[in-house]
Length: 215
Image: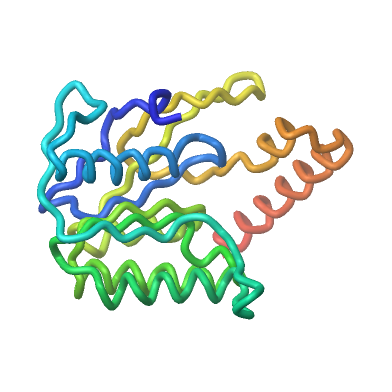
């Protein structure tokens, strides 16, 4: 819940107007971003907000791309719905808008998804200039902070000890490079042989990637 997600970083201002949010599945990335959107909306209508203190600028619109639903009646796949919503944001948002993006590109092949997410980030940063929160498991996107001045990395923290993962519900500076998807599968009750095999496959894939990186 929003009450469980504590703010310990992640300020969006003129110098850090685009936050890339990484972190494990179930860690609170989506909750954190939706909380930011709701606080912005509440502040703009003159309401109290659930914070000890807050500095919230006016926006001309809040644009969101969250969730994953198809529209069978209209013949639109999950990915088509995602792309049409992204298109609307890229055409409609302004530098005075707040944009919330949750896992853009996940509905297609990995490299296609990364490419679309990368290009959308560059366009929002360079052309639209809207304040943006973008949650992603594409850790390649975190390197954009080295090239785009307003892009900044934050992550939702976890504590990992003796193979146990604890979600800390805090937003901290910098990127993370792990998603802990196998751990979440275990929490969901996926049969132990499947979880063990998934962990084995993951370890092998990481080893292969490390070997390729060394080249």
